[in-house]
Length: 301
Length: 301
Image (cartoon, rainbow over all chains, first blue to last red; front, side, top):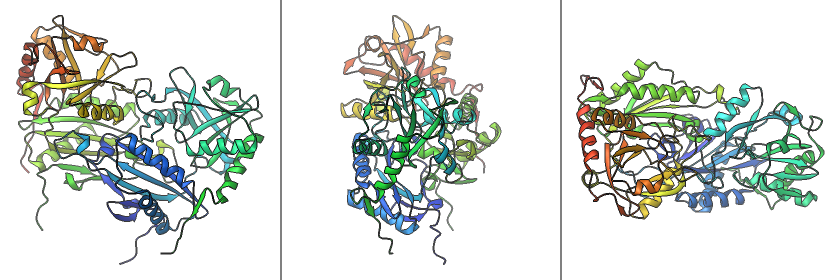
């Protein structure tokens, strides 16, 4: 018997740890058949979780919002995520925790009778932007697809309802852009697939104030801005204001602060990452060594 | 080696048929992690598919809409569904066909690079209403949750974006109702979890005209109504008009035409299934023996 190959990542399912490629969920879990699930993603950088507390806070809030019970305490979730990372040996990792509805007894459609399930996995760190995009800046398109509104699905509780984002992404990629921004019913910018967005407008940082996920990376940007003395406004952001901005960037667990230099095929500023963006990128990575935000993982098995 | 227990249902996954309880999808399939999938459900009654052609038409239309390719021809899908039913031995079955995005190569977020996957399963026929509810009528609640609008996700292409329906269902069940109806942004009735809705208003059948799934059972009701000489209007249906209707029923693959006798704790008519509803229930089952709509399954192995 050779030991399992954990190099591509490790998952936790039904009480077991296994290579990510072997991990599955039951076909009949409502987490799949009704997208009845919540999740959160925390990153590991240089062998330490970044802002794990904030992600756990939100994960348990999301569970409560959707009436899901992962059946694990906060410490047990932390231990499970740590074990996924430890087994993988990954020093930089994208770590996802998931709670699904499970399924009610056959024939019942009462979600209150389902036994909820907890899953997790750790895979190599995921960058939304590759090295060249991080240096030169992303090219985004503004879609006319409306992000699912809060009156339908609460965007502050994480969920897998991504069809609008995915269809927008297809169109943006087809048009030669790197990713997409969705709008609300009146044309204000909301968010993109896996990221929040900011721009510099008249010297002030502006980011949408409602209708989007309240990203932990978004919160980190706001906190960094305050510490750097940048003014931040959380408010409606019309697409035209974004297009006319001096700087644009996105915030995401998939790379932190990522510059955007083209929107709808038009250059932002001089089409290179601006000074406030560069300062926030630098600060983002600096904060990864702050003990207040980082939790080192013990990799000894 | 004993033969597998197919009595609870049979699934098809990755080229194999297996007991439903053993069927799974990869944890990393975007069909789960981004609810990036489509599906359709056809029923088997008395050993024959009911309106399989209509369901296949819609399944392939949904695939095209979401840029999914099941990788099987129409005949191959039919053969796969038939084999699931045949192995199960079920004479009355709920048969689901699914196409998921699969996943792009690790590190990529380009859905165009994913290899789409086809899954299917056949399980015992699912009734949305139990025997007592079918006789006495269902009790529905009108939620103030808005069904995800068409500007975000096209409701005519089937998808698993059910959080709004599931949260509405929780609230309805908590309040003692059997299920829920969701509304649109201006308060018109749209649909419920797994069903369309009709009412009899001034002697005319009324059903919402947009914002909802164009159910095959809904279409069957409209066709039956025409054959019975009932007038049908597909138009906006205000919640108050529904509450004041003489009759209310839902249409679903999970039981056909199901009477509704209470809405928001108020009786519809005399709180028993009305004459037009009863006629449509009878006609629905009569049509199951019409060769134009039924395709017998060869159960010989």
